[in-house]
Image (tube, rainbow, N blue to C red):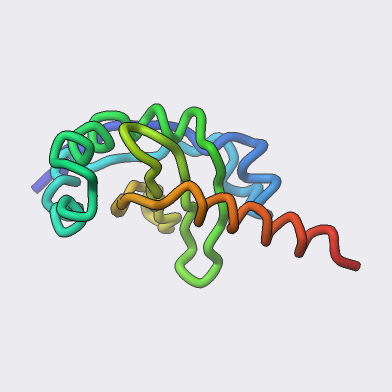
Length: 126
């Protein structure tokens, strides 16, 4: 049975280099057309069902112009933070077979800014 996938973005060279994963530069990011089945558990975390759907149909825009991106080495994934109707985190799994959006959920801008600040402090420390 063939899965229906669509390309929703590409890992930019800048994101791959800055996160220490240059081997993933210019690799396509896939999304299953059934992603909504996996993300439904987060639907009630959004302001509204419309906000949830806005995120679902705008994943490509967040990946193209993220507010912030970080690499999670424990889960071998990139976390793309951006804004649709509200701030969100889109998890991109870096699997050997494929690079794909595994889930997404809302995230407060304050928490994202705190993550950004922590990374800057760590990278500036001797």
